[in-house]
Image 1: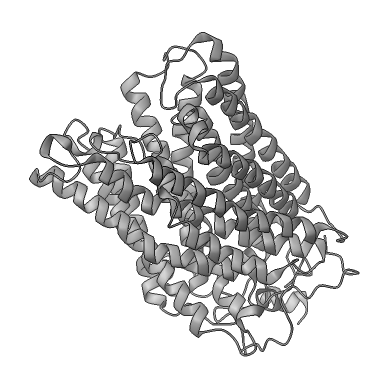
Image 2: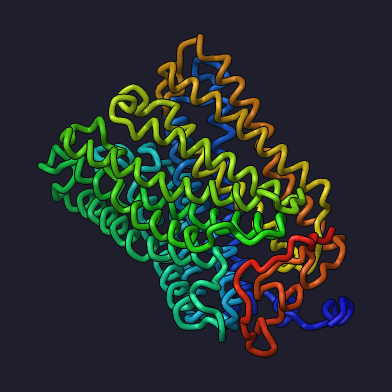
Length: 538
């Protein structure tokens, strides 16, 4: 089929173009777009709170906002970014859009459940935004007891209710993905012909289904305690605040892998394509993703080294945390081996993917510092921790998210974006991120505690440097929104496979028809069967 025919063919975007058709759609691709619009708006709110924090930290004394407002700002930033952007970012957007096409299906297993998950997500977000704006919450994004179980922070219950509702959205999404991957693969699509993005989404879905109910139960117990005064976590009522930490981190450490494992899948697709090389050690990469998901349930106690838990428990959690670095290291080494002797093309998605690998490596290595019992005593609750989790949860995950958006943008929209601007944005984001958060490693080592709006004057130079980097990073995040929206109207029409990539999603039109494939595809070759003499277009 030629480009003109593809351009004129009816597709998922042009079928039933009205608001009602979108709000009642059962098409996984449209639901992915709805999620993308929603989390983009929420990212803007969370980013605005971060900007206020960095502006306030330009001076050693909190001059821009009051201390109470500062506490509410970092809570707003953390709650929105973690629960309503980072966790759903890749699974709910790219996962929803791509999984059925990658496995050769016409939709997800439960289309109505998929639409319901988006409505639950929106409902949870509205609850939480109401709580954060109508009086605010100052407990931090972790809702630690006894802060959250007292009545000094009146909107905690509403915020937690929003997160509780959004959790059901995650569970439904994960369940839908698992059933689809198990039961709706095209003929010839064996488990070890699956793209690594599908393996990543499968591992992530297992975490979503198994871990999220623990968070839901924890927040429900917190609500019961607040409403009925039953002692669960509040020591004043005979409860145990450490129980809250155990339950919370039992979910929240696997949640880190909900953010980063999908990013690994995206990076694998991009690196293989723009190296024209099969992924080195494909089976090891697939097993490593499952191992990361499994280990994620066993290491929650490393968040509690200074909480008073036994030295034996601390030693076990430290060892397990060091062990989880093994499958993560396998992935970095295998991406590096894939690059070796590859026909590398530095298109924008590749620059984002390489940025992901770099930031993920720094974040992972600094995590080993925090896994060490002795060092963690010095670094706990300092800006070293802030820098570490931002390198993993924001730097790596968001770089991969942007890389995936750029990689599949021609498939999603049928339009190409300006490559020069995209490359500039990728480089600017990488520089801005490092300038923002690397100084925070130094601040943490020097002893600056996190969540404080006031600090000694000798720390100001590092905070000014970090705030300057944040301004570059903000520009790097906003720029793609501008040129990608521009490309919807003015971008060059995209062919079905502009990158010469492998995978079933590239065998259908750009944008795809509503049913994805006019006939069920049959898979006859291994994943990533690239010839090194090929080169991506553009």
